[in-house]
Structures are given as C-alpha cells and as structure tokens.
Length: 268
Length: 307
Image (cartoon, rainbow over all chains, first blue to last red; front, side, top):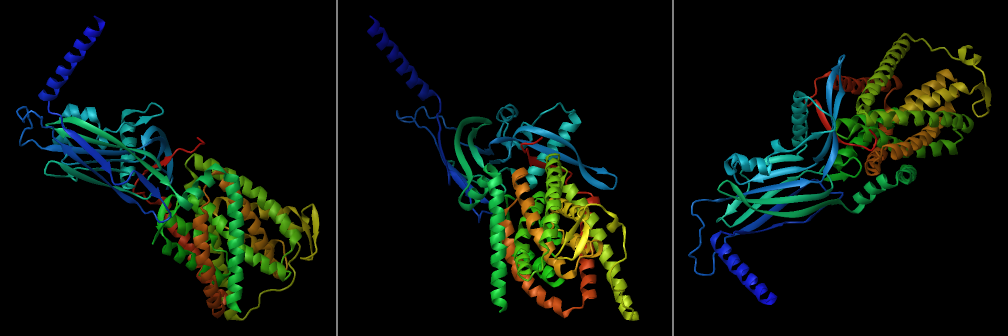
C-alpha cells in the first residue's frame, strides 16, 4: 500500500510539473564574464570587463502551441557589479579661520567600494516603481548606514558627498542605455574599472527584465587581487610592517650606495 | 608608461616620476641641498596621498644621503661623536613626530598638518635666505667684507652638561646638539625632509662647528634619522612606498650629476636667490591651496584600524 501511494504521488507531481512548464514561459539566461579574475600588476592602469550572455526563450516541445512569447515586448538587461562591503570614513572640510580643514566626519557602515550599474535603457523606463524599489539597483538607492544617528539634512549632505566622491574617483557609475542586445538574444555590457579599484571579491548580477518585471537573475563572482611584486610589497608592508621597514631601509642604503658608486665611476 | 604604486595604491606615469626625481636631483646638485622639502610638495601636487609622500620621501632621503655620508666619512669629514649626539636627539624627535603623525592620520588631520608645516617652514627659510642673499649681494657691491673670526660668547656657552668634541675642536653643552637633532627628527617625521636646511645653519652659527665637518656630520645624521623615520612610518601607518622611493632615486642620482655641473658656473649669491625664490613659490602654492575653496569638501577614505 505504501509503495503504491508513493508511485501515485510521484505521478501526480510529474503531471503537475509538465503542466506548469507548458503554461509559463520559461526563459533561460546564460551569462559569463570575459574574466573571473582581475590582477593588479605593476602595469595596471585600470581595466575593462565584458559581461555577456544569451537569452534563451523556451519553446515547448509539443509544437509551439503554448508559446506565449509576446512579440513587440523587448527584453531589458540590468547589470550590477559591486565589491565587498567595508566601513569607510567620510570627512567634510569647513572653514576654520582662513583655512579649509576637515572638521566633521562620519563612519559609514558596510558600503561598497565599487558599484557600477549598466542597463539597456533608462532604469525608470525599464522597471515599474515597485520593482525598482525591490531591486534597488540605482546608485541613488544604495543603502548607506551611519554608525551614529544623523539628522536628515546631514544624512542627505553626507550621502550626496559620498556618492559624488565615489563617482569622481570612477568607483561608482551608472550608465543607462549602454548594454547592447542583439536580436533579442545576445547581450554585452562593458564596465570600466579604475586603477584604484578595491581588491577582494566582487559580485556580478545580471537581471533579465520584461514588461517592467525582473523575470530572471543570474549571479557570478569576480575576484580582484594584487599579484606579483605588487602583491608581495603590499602584503609584506601590511602583514610584517617592522620587517618591511627594515627591508625598506636596507634597500635604500644599498641603492644609495650603488648610485654613488656608479656616479663616481662615470665621473672618472 | 603607467606604473601602479603598491602602497600609494594609484597608477602614475613612470616618466613623470623620473622627471620629478631628476628635476629635484638637478636642483639639489646645483644648490647642494637635500631636496626633500621640494620633492614632498611635488609628490602631493601630482596626487600622491600626503602621508605616503612624507613617509616615502624619508625613505628616499636615506638613499640619497648615504653615499655622501660615506664619501665624507672617508675624507674625515664627519665628527662621529657630534653625529651620535645629533642622532640620539633625532631618534627621540622622530619618535614623537611619528606619534603625532599617526594620531593626526587617524583623525584625518595629517594632510592639513603637513601643509601647514610646509607653509610655515618654507616661508621662514625662503624669506630668510632671500633677505640674506640680497644683503650679501649689496655688501659685495659696496666692497665690504663680512666680519671674520670666532663668534663672541653667547647664551650657548652658558648651557650646562658640556662635552668635548675632538674632531670639531669644540667644548659645548650636549643640550644644544640634542635639541637641534630633536627638531630635525620631528621635521623628518612630519614633513619628509632630511632637515639639512635647518641643521647646517644651526651647526655653523649656533654650535660654531668647523665648516669641513658640518656637511658630512649632517649627512651622517640624516641617513640614520630618515632610516628611523622610515621604520616608524612603516610600523605605524604603512605609508612607505619602496617602489616610489626607488624610482625617484634613479631620477635624483642622474639629475644631481647634471645639477652639480651647472652649479659650478653660477655665483653663490645668485644661486641662493634662485633657491629662495623656488622655496617661496612652493610655499605660496601650498598656502593658496589651504585657503582657496576646495572643489569638493567631502573626502572618503577607508577606515584604518585606529579610530
């Protein structure tokens, strides 16, 4: 009896599953990055990352009768790339006597050091208001938490100052309408990273949007690290600072001596 | 060609750095000065974080002064006893300077302190040099000779704890060289300068040391004190960029050679007026930057470990 009930249950769930796939249009999206690792070497002066993919429209095997891909409604893509979150300090200069000096400061809890969003069309045309709120992809929607209570006016001023700063450093960017979609199937987005990009793990989200709603999201990861001499020097300086200091002195003494030695030779 | 500096964490044109090293090296070869007080502001002007500029420049000065110190040592141009007294003062001074630097870096005021220190010192030194060299030119025109001979007894001779310095043939209080060394140590830590521009006049006019040991002893002290500063900044703030220091050094070594040949062709007073004008120009630029409204009043930085 128990075996029989198991089989019936299995059968029922299979039938239901089939019916489900036939009713709902199930697009598939495949995405990838031109590189999953960005290496900061001594020649690093910023880089570009290509995010590409394909949209696959599910057409049912039974002959296309259930195919409800609506002609005339295009797909839109939203790509969001963000780095790990870290605490940051924002300072504000004020006039003290005749001099501009840092006076106010706030600690921002857990904010992205890099944030880029790029889309096929302006965000407000792609997403409904609710969806836009839900996704929170626009730079203006980035959550910025202060470590202490801040008045509303201050919060807005610091927030705007922060975003302006990050945009000026090219660490935050929002480019709408720069993703190109080919034949409603292939898409490609190019994102620029400046030389001062933070290291660590990055998260790349690709959202497929149709008719104002996000219907699919794909996530992949990207690793940014210093390699070679850059990495050695950087981690040496931070992990063994005393030893690094001594080596810096020895290198300087030797280089200085060598320089003097060579100039004497040339002089003679 | 861009190069990525591992500690400054920025990408910069390597030829620009070589040119800066060469230019400052040229001037230091021509004028016989260390060049730290020109290089640090230049690094800041091209966008190197001020804290990194100061710490790295200290490291570069270690390299720039060692071969000179060795050469003077071989010629007997160093008063080692005096040198050690100056180094002890310098070590204490750089320790406190580095502490101040670390605290101010954590509170976001280090850039302001560096600028203020530069405006103050460059203004004072440049102004004095300018007045002094104009005076001496006028004196030469009139044909007067500056007074020669030993200076008269002053407050310096009244200080306690006297010590004999054989190489300099002096018997003076250790307090004065300790204080001079200490001041130079503080300046090295907070400004990234060797401090020769203070120490050399102080040794000549205050201590009355014989000229032949002044430069060597000063270079001897600078090598050790900037090494101490390099160490302290490496440990406290991780701001020493070895790669940057080496690139600057390469430029400086070449520039100094060319500068030294030019320097011989120019008269002393003319040189000093030129240097004074240069110093005042750098000072003026820094002062203008301090008082003019910044393009962006907000600045963002990573949180250090210290709050």
